[in-house]
Amino acid sequence: MKNVEANMGLELRGLKKILGGRVIIENLDLSMAKGEMISLLGPSGCGKTTTLRMIAGFLIPDAGTVKVAGKDVTNLGPEKRPSAMVFQNYALWPHMTVSRNVAYPLKIKGLGKIETAEKVEAALGLVNLLHHQDSRPGRISGGEQQRVALARALVQEPDVLLLDEPLSNLDAKLREKVREDIRELQRRLGITTVIVTHDQEEALSISDRVAVMNAGKIEQFSNPQDLYRHPATEYVATFIGALNRFEGNLVEGRIVSGSDVIGIRPEDLILSSQQNDDALPGTVELVIPRGHFFEVVIRREDGIFKAFTNEFIPAVGENVFVKIKKSLRYQNGKLVG
Amino acid sequence: MRRYFNPSKVALNLSVFLLALFILGPILWLGVHAFVTDWKYPHLYPSGLTLNWWSKVFLDSALKTAIRNSLIISPIVVVLSMVICLPAAYAAGRMNYWGRKTFMITLFSANSFPKIGLFAAIATLYYTLNLMGTFLGVVIIQLLGTIIYMTWIPAAAFASVPRYLEEAARDAGASKFTVFRTITLRMAMPGILVAIVMSFLASFDEAQGSYLVGAPTIYTMPTEMYSLVQNYPIQVAAVFSILLAIPSVLLLGLARKHIMGGQLAEGFQIK
Image (cartoon, rainbow over all chains, first blue to last red; front, side, top):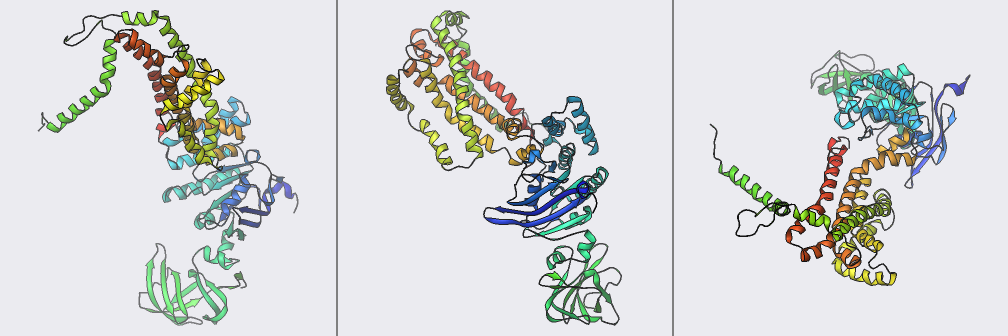
């Protein structure tokens, strides 16, 4: 824990926000290192956007502090904060050309003409948009508009880059490429970045760590593998990835009635045509090809299981043996084993 | 095979021509009469061309005064209207306060019953305030007709500026005032320009109230028309009508360039 301040990217302490009489965020803590990229992941209404807007300064928290790069910015307006935001709909100014959009923050700062032009060119170069300098935002594609918005944020050289659902307005094909581009750029510039998203695939593939949010609280803040393999709460387990969920206990590979909640990932079920230890027989009800694997639905006497497999692919109606390789056990929503 | 005669096409062209004639006919009539000596039934052609009517207008000092008055009063009315109405329009467009809708509807009241009644009532007030026959009196009367344009159109323009565009500017480091100046006002400008044009025309063409309040000391171009029609041949009125139309046409042309050529025509795709 040496030189904590210098390594501090962003720190939220005891954040609270009430909007319209409703508690949106309740006592939220989060801290991230400089150069880290994190996601705030959750369904709509979980408070992720509210949290982002409190970091950006559009909302002043009712309690708690926001520190950016070790500096308390809680009571500063958005224009005074060292953060830059890329809006969900990009928020480009239609009456300015692309380069004037990007130059705007520098002009406000009072930078000279030559320096502004240099920085704008560098920023547009970063996002490969130099050829669209003089276009109006309305004349370029959605993906290009987003890159302009990104350039406009980067040109400010912010301590924290905020991305609000950056990929939600792009079509599926472009999404993956832009995702990689953003990640590559973020790594190269070493810029502390917070992404808000409701898309778990996006969050898991792009971030160093993901904060899974639910009802104004962070359920778990961890790296993607950890979130998937060791979901701390039942909510995270069901939210991230697919899950077989049973109310009961697991005794000798069998679900029996009980007070716990058992979660089993579909890939943690081993299918085979022969009996082996702990495997129980079941009937295949459905086989769905999912590209590089198959989803198989099997009815056992203790429940219906969904399994992912790409080795042994049974036929519908076939009798197979299903073994539970790994399971998650929850009591009152919390992971106990 | 190409068809050389298409009845529906001919009918369409004919109806377009008739419509154009109906709309432009009176203007053509004015245009011709301003330059001819005389042209009356049953003569097929005008009896001769002349610029005599134009020199009449420019040599008559009363007419010149009317033109000067109009060109001074209307811009003053527009600027005053902007000063008074634009802040109200911004408030009505961007803020939500109690009685906002009622306020906006109330603004119609000046336009909602016969104006001459309103002017008569105002005239009695003017007599007590000694505004009858004064420059200020005419300006105030003309202001009344511009208020509805200068509030409703800019209010809609301000309301249609997306908040996130202002937020993006704030995020980029701009103060609230800079955001207003560089983003909100700029984006509402087409609407404000339309309001300016409409207000100018409303003021420039206003005759009833200006006549009632201004005559006989202050004449504007439209009120001067009354005496013109009575005292001169019809051709002088035609010349004056053309002069009356020039500022309107210029202003519309200017506005067209800025409104149609601006970001409204850019086809902004983001919602």
